[in-house]
Image (cartoon, one colour):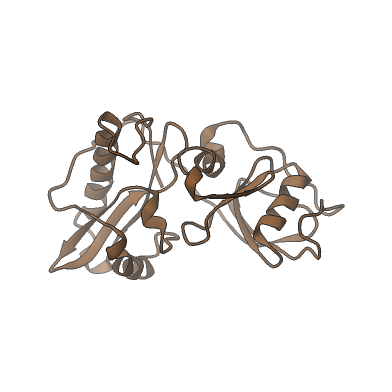
Length: 231
């Protein structure tokens, strides 16, 4: 479950008192703490941190994590990090301290590909910063999830073009130790039903495997070939 909570504390950064009971601490599994694990590891260069709260830079991704959901100080640190009137998206949270209120709650599924037929795709092209305007337009049409101006920097993103136009894409987002999240999987409505998303997921996985086997500068070699998390 993903819960978005709004912050309206009068004095951000001070420990909250009273209010709803705070939920139990997050489980220790890296996939239950994927944002924290990514930002304190592979994606540390994108991190902004205050005490026990950490987030991606605002133009990279909208995700924030607390070291311990049960610790009031972690929530106070998030308030200080994000500022008054801020919005915080957290997974696995069902209660929160005084000064925060729920704005949006949604169920979500986390899928782990124990096996995946990874294979390059001859039609897939690597997307880069120059493609961001087209990417954002495709994201707006298909709504696969958040994609910001610098999300492209999080990993490899591949696309398929027809008549020069970007009509499908997929890429890498979170990188907790041992896993790579495959995200932003989307296809323009006019081209669905052709298996393009499946092909791109396989191609992204193949790209990840190649990087692990022969890492180029700036790429991680720590992700095992079976450690992928489509999502």
